Length: 604
Image (cartoon, rainbow, N blue to C red; front, top):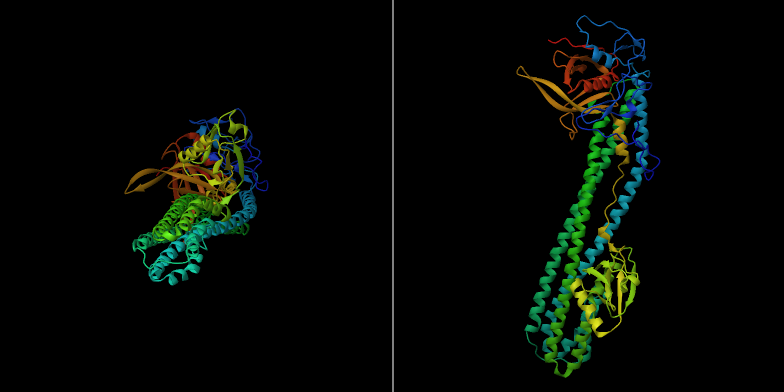
């Protein structure tokens, strides 16, 4: 029974056959390797192993001579051959199960057809790969632009603090005469010109103060400048360290991902090249070396794609942490700068007795600047927000019927004021009565309680739940549909076998993970996760024999090898756990035999 098709949401241009599930302890045969024309009679029904995995027993051809492994004359026709005297007759049970007819289609023709199928899938996958690469390039361009915007904002804040310290140093020296003090008016107007709108308003207060006063006292207290200068320089240094760190982190992450993307692309090209060489080799009638089997290059490519996805997930998490740290530091810088400016203006007020009213107005202007709204505006205008849909809703000064954590709505009570106004869980409180909402839900609750107590209308601006930071968006992942299809096409049979080895006269059996590819190569690997085989056997140039005297479920593959000084024979002995598994392996190996014969091995 063929496996179920892939859901219709997948691209229709690729084949929609998924690989069957393969269990570690059982042998599974890929559907495309089953011989046509096989039927099931009373003796050849599905059999079940310990974990109820169905298998199809081959049918004994009617009217045959009972030889389950006929010789191939090279044209696909089977001839009756007599068994050598050195070969013993197998048990009737195994003989009867192994006496299946050879495929009518010649081995070379079947392999060529399978090679064409693999090349066709690769061509279709290349088109999808081009779309994936275009999406990746566009995504990383947007990420780089957003990151540079972030670095520019942090750099502007550092410049503001350094300029503040520099101007305070100049003003300290300029306190000698009122003329020098007034000469700094234009320079104060330039402070914070590259910063946010709210920060420019904060920095402009001192310039307005100088214009209003018109005169300056001859002496000023030294402590008016020392503390603000030291604090501004300290914060500027911390910002510089932060900028250097995030630039280094971003460069390292993006560089690593770019190298992995390039490596993945090279591995894909290597697999395409190996598949093309394999097709050319079979078309020219030459045997491919086992180490050149495209299956090995394909396994390397598959693992590189998985590694790329892991690195991209790590990038998304790290950038989210950087953005959270940036917002925290930006808010701290804004509050600290406002505090420094309030200290400077308040101190000057004590000395400017003739300008007390002007200083009071300057303090009022500083307090009214909404720094949080400035940060929110930057998030919108700086490209850090995606899909920023908002809604302003008027509430009556009474119970609203909504719960929130920080500024995020977690629950709306049915029948409440919020429910009737259409508030949805997941929305965020951005501002209350045109002032930016505090960060914690405790502070938001205090603001709302004070407005309710005063009986004033409450206007809340919400950000709908589609709002989010651009760094919250994960990188696009590559399509893996072609990996599943090619896995099914490349593999003919997989499973576990025990390999016999002799060391200093002692015989031992080692459990190995064995793979028969559609190229007719048996790869013997140390484990399921291994990519380099322990050994590879070219089945087209091999002879298959049963070895009941070594083990009841053992079989031998005698491989013809080519070397610099001539050819030779190399023996490989394997065994299975059950008789059913032995039959399955022998039947699958026999499909790829070209000139070999099968029989019972004489135990030495």
